[in-house]
Amino acid sequence: MRVSRLVTKSLRDDPPEAESASHRLMLKAGLIYQVAAGVYSALPLAWRSLRKIENIIREEMDAAGGQELLMPALQPMELWEQSGRRSAFGENLFSLQDRRGREMALAPTHEEVVTSIVRANVQSYRDLPVILYQIQTKFRDEPRPRAGLIRVREFAMKDAYSFNADDDSLDDSYQAMAQAYRNIYRRCGLPVLMAEADSGAIGGKDSHEFLLITPTGEDTVIHCASCQYAANAEKAEAVYRELSPEPEQPLEEISTPGLKTIAGLADFLDIPAEKTLKAVFYMADGAPVFVTIRGDLEVNEVKLKNALHANDLRMASDAEVAEAGLVAGSASAIGLEGITSVGDLSISSGNNFVVGANRPDFHLRGANYPRDFNVDIQTDITLIQPGHLCPNCRTPLDAVRGIEVGHIFKLGTGYAESFGATYLDSEGQQQTITMGCYGIGVGRLLAAAIEQNHDDDGIVFPAPIAPYQVHLVGLNLTDESVAGEAERLYQRLELEGVDVLYDDRPDRTAGVKLNDADLLGLPIRLVVSPRNLRNGAVEMKERKDSEAVMVPLDEVATKVQESLSASVL
Ligand SMILES: [Zn+2]
Image 1: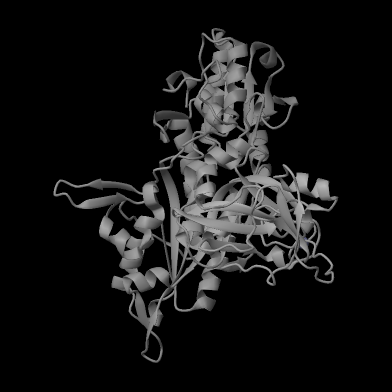
Image 2: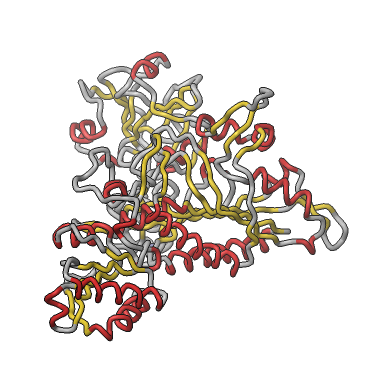
């Protein structure tokens, strides 16, 4: 491709609307064009990268036994009522009416349709297992689309679904997909971390996320450097220091004038925060919830939401706290009535806690669970933080930030039950099919790759997913011998199957051309200039290296091939 013919132009200045490095660089290098909030065109350079990613995904899905199909984005709303997911997705589900007033949805994912297909086609255990996949457009009405292709409302996704006779077979499919995912990221040149994850609105049992580690990632992954345990912080199991038990003390009210925080209280009483219990107030689907957790720990809202089976969970406002008759800063579950209460497991990890007295400026000392108060639900709702202990090996955990670029779930039999997807086993008995689902956001993977691989000058594309492999820059192209040599090299490389972007613009300075090459970040830059040609050579530089080397003209093609094959992970 000749830069002079390329429809897109790079921008000289940073686009002011950019919210992240990948957003800024993709706009600046002319990869994407915004059509509406969270809705983008992939321009020719980005589309080449996306197709390379899709091809890798297809090859690995096919190798893992997947069969590709294509399902519609436009779906009758009844399917979403039948699965119960209309309410689970809520406002994130794009809905519309057709001309007859029939309600339709633009699908954010395809469990409903694919399960219907399998119900109609699978009869016997001999027909299982089946893995179906597609690369297709999804719609989600995100409340806050942001950061370019990281969080959008319309996006291409590879979604795969496995249908299995039993849990062992589901586990086989799940492991095969996990391996296919590892292969995909490796072949894209992108190292990932596979972490235990929460299954969220999709529902189900086991779930893992694949994350590209980058400091700007929106997800926190808890990681054990010793045993390589990794889990999304939303999901990670809590292991914290147990307090040594003491003889139970009687409850005693103490004056704590003006003290409303755990830190202030612990300071005033000269006790560690873990000897206190704190109260946190939430609204779950519009009803108040009273949460008790040890004073040194924080509430994990995802675990809490799951424990309550709530669709919507948020912190209660001051007015809602007052309306529920609670005393902010001095509340406890002691004597609490008429409000759903949840206790973290940590309330059993010690005794003789200091808790709120349910009146301002007073607390209670010697509070013991369950002697002095009860909770409706007791479960793990602790937010894991660095320094907490690894659930496998008790090493202190650390935290890294990443961007989710893939997610796999064991769904179980829920969808098959909703849609009546059954099979006859070897004894002729009817059984329910069990299911897994497996997703990769294709555009998000490209954006995350750029988020992870860039420097001050621009993108540093991993070779397998770069739009072109070589950026050939001709300098002083008004000089006919230079123009002729650059042209010959361009054609020679193309003939050898190398993807070349040739900056053939005669009217741009060396500075502009070299800056553009750094900005787009193709793996190899070749510079043909009068000075280099006098030595019978071309300057070759790998984007990720700082050093340029001179390569004799007749060795360029070989050196390029060597460099490209060395870049495969
Ligand atoms: Zn560990």
